Length: 239
Length: 91
Image 1 (cartoon, rainbow over the protein chains, first blue to last red):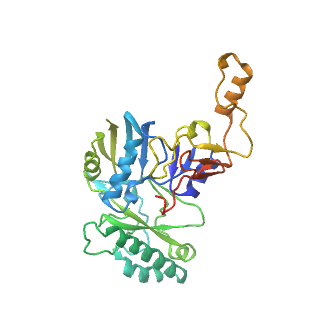
Image 2 (tube, rainbow over the protein chains, first blue to last red):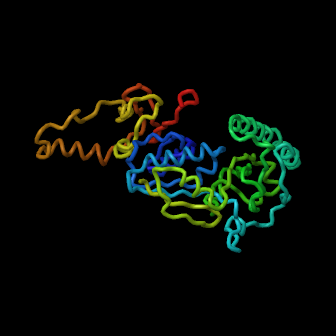
Image 3 (tube, helix red, strand yellow):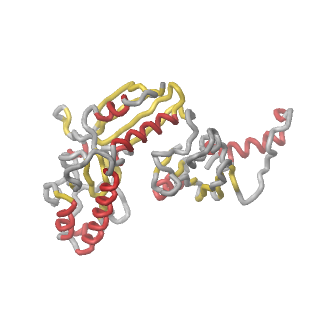
């Protein structure tokens, strides 16, 4: 049985006759200790604070019966590891987008160059996210610069907390190998004028970070910890 | 939603007593074909077993709702998909 926060995505599962329901990863409506195994693939890296990320793992552990196992995949900061580039980097196909990091402030200007329709939508998305992020950081460790960089798809990450553009391209989404859906590489300038761009928040994990978060929980044991095509992965066992 | 899925689900409305969210009451347009409890000797009752098999393995709820036993909060099921998202205020 599967679940996701997006009703539209879950409806697609329903159409394909899979058992799925809509819920939030912080509060999963499944009885404690009722699962032999759980997987969380490309989910936790969307939560904007360390506290919330820990809470999702704690919730995942709650669902497991003693001896049950969980598999977690999150996007890695290190897209090149042991001299091997991940598939995500390898499939860079000569995009015309400038390869530079831009803050959300200037992102509006840069993206509005590419078509009149995009600019207002982008500023709405970025501003809303910025306000949400500001609220999140109240009471948490103070952040010197609250502006989140907007990532250039198919390049290395320069920051752990960032916004990744998502281009809606004529209704069909390309599936990405590094366990992240919805990214379309190198969308041409012409296509960008037709399709809206959304900015999705990611916290990409450094080596050892996911493992450390899991180790801070008493109820689970880290069985295995590894790197796979641009992702940091753990297998947990419920104690 | 299959009955097997329903068996895993529990209401997660905050502030419930332990176990107070399970089982969610399935609300359909029409009454159930099964009695609330199996009668003694049901193993030999062919008619009952046939109806039980049907409900367990052949029925999927497409439209209806799930009701939390303690709080009464209803969660909708549409196109076979239960939506158990709490609102901002509830969570």
